[in-house]
Structure formats: C-alpha cells, structure tokens
Image 1: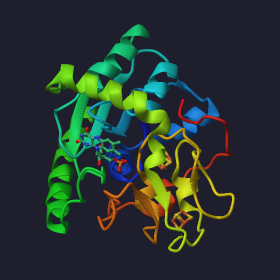
Image 2: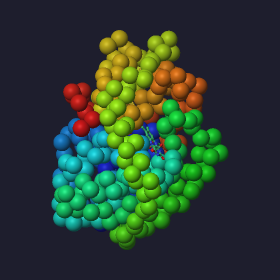
Image 3: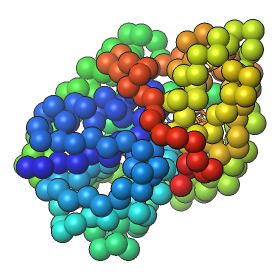
Amino acid sequence: MKTVIFYLSATGNSLYVARFLQSALGDTALRSIPEALADGRFAVEADVVGIVFPLHYMGLPLQVEALLERLEIAGTPYLFAIATCGVPYIGTPFVDAADILTQKGHHWNAAWYLRLVSNYLPLRDTAADWRIRIRAWLAERKLRKIAGAIAKREPHRTWQLLQQPCRRLHREWKERQQRIDENFHCDTGKCTACGLCERVCPTGNIARPDGHPVWQHRCTECLGCLHICPTEAIDYGEKTKGRHRYRHKDIAPKDLLHHFAPKEDRRL
Ligand SMILES: Cc1cc2nc3c(=O)[nH]c(=O)nc-3n(C[C@H](O)[C@H](O)[C@H](O)COP(=O)(O)O)c2cc1C
Ligand code: SF4
Ligand code: SF4
C-alpha cells in the first residue's frame, strides 16, 4: 500500500506524527508542504494520501489551503487529514479542507485531531514538562489506533464545534496576516547570527542583511523562528518574554529546516 503524507510543521508536532505513520504504515513517502509549494510538484499518485498540519486559529494554515487548491490527486485514493493542536474539536479545518477537495471531485475518508502541545506562545506559556509527557503518551496511544484505521482504510468522522464563530475569527486572522510579523523583534545583543530562524521559515520571510533577522511581511505566524532560536533572541511583542520555547522531543532543529532558495512570496 503506497502512501504519501504531506506535512507542515514549525515545532515538530506534525512532523513527529508524519514520521510515526511512516514507520507504522511502511512504503510511505513524506513530503514537506513548503517544499512542494516551492517546487510546484503537486501531482500525487498513491493508494493513500494524507495531510498532517498544525491547527492555526481554529482552521487551516494558509500553506495547507494553498496546497489543497493545487494538489492533483490521481484516481480515488483513501484520503486522510490530521490536525495537531493544543485544544481539539474547536474549529473548522476538516470542513474547510473538504470544501476545497469537493471542488476537485474528492472527499476525506478520515480526519482526526491529535492533541499535543500548543506552541502558540503569545497566548500562554508552554505546558509544564509533566503535562507534555502525559500528552505525548496519550497521543502515541491514539496514533497507534489511527495507523491501524489507515492501514484498513476505515472511514472516520470528527466533530468540529463552534463552526460559525471559529470561521469568523479565522477569517479575521487571515486578513491581519500580511503584517502580523510587525510584532516580532530581535534582541541583537543575544543574536549570534546563526541563521536558523531564516532556514526554518516556510515562507522565506526572514532576511538577514547584517546577520540578524528582518521580517519581510509575508508571514503565516507559524512561530518557527521564535521557537527555534537557540539564544531566545526573538520575541513576539512583550507577551513571549520569559516564556518557554517548545520543540517536540523526537524532532531535532535540523529536521525543521527548509531547503529552498528565496522567492518573492512563498506563502502561496
Ligand atoms: C498561529 C497559531 C495558531 C494556533 N491556533 C490554535 C488553535 O486554534 N487551536 C489549537 O488547539 N492550537 C492552536 N495552535 C497550536 C498548534 O496548532 C499546535 O501547537 C500544533 O501541534 C503545532 O504543530 P507543529 O509543531 O507541527 O507546528 C496554534 C499555533 C499557532 C502558531
Ligand atoms: S536563530 Fe536567533 S541567534 Fe540565530 S540568527 Fe536568528 S535570531 Fe539570531
Ligand atoms: S517569519 Fe513568520 S512564517 Fe517565518 S518562521 Fe517566523 S512566524 Fe513562521
């Protein structure tokens, strides 16, 4: 059973899920969504096609939406989606994705939320270590069941609560997105000009004219730059100061870096 999984991941939760499924299912290729958007390789032919992504403002990250719109799926494979998140069930990612797929003559066979750890640091600090360990254990248990269901190509529906208010909040967030990175700043006293923030950015939004990051106003607010900085030189307004940076324990910083040349707008 040939499987292709597209993934988007800033702090490793979704990449961990994609890798877990790759090892559980066998014969599985992983494809980074930012790199697929950069390469323009949208054709996919497989028995199973999955997409794993973080829940962003109760909906789809912009790059996931862009990928779904462009994806050219051959035949009628089993299609599944997994949204990793801090708070499951509140949002509209799967109905929104279904709307895009329906226009292309496809539909989801299965969708799941997978609760891990929220990386949305402007809202609240990262969960305590003991909570992270419990969540990881519960997530792995659920993932084993998910892998079993995918292997048998079982259908699975997931509740999505508070759809109307969530859609409104998600739309308002998208409208703010272009200039959302005005909230970022870099403490040049702490910055060692290592370049990790530039290389983790899925949209090519960070330039470093004098070694330190300068944001270019095509951000999707994934927060990858803020979390990966080894010296915690990056903050988002005042809210993230002193809060704990996060990365999934099984994912190394190098696994999150992208390999593409700068281009004008890599969000879409
Ligand atoms: C901009 C932004 C918005 C987010 N919104 C939500 C949300 O609405 N609900 C939720 O449960 N988690 C939310 N999160 C948390 C992420 O979905 C969660 O931490 C995810 O597992 C991160 O995956 P990654 O490590 O693969 O990037 C948000 C994170 C970001 C950066
Ligand atoms: S990751 Fe941090 S230390 Fe490295 S260049 Fe960016 S801001 Fe500077
Ligand atoms: S600049 Fe924006 S899109 Fe790029 S890594 Fe930072 S938060 Fe993500």
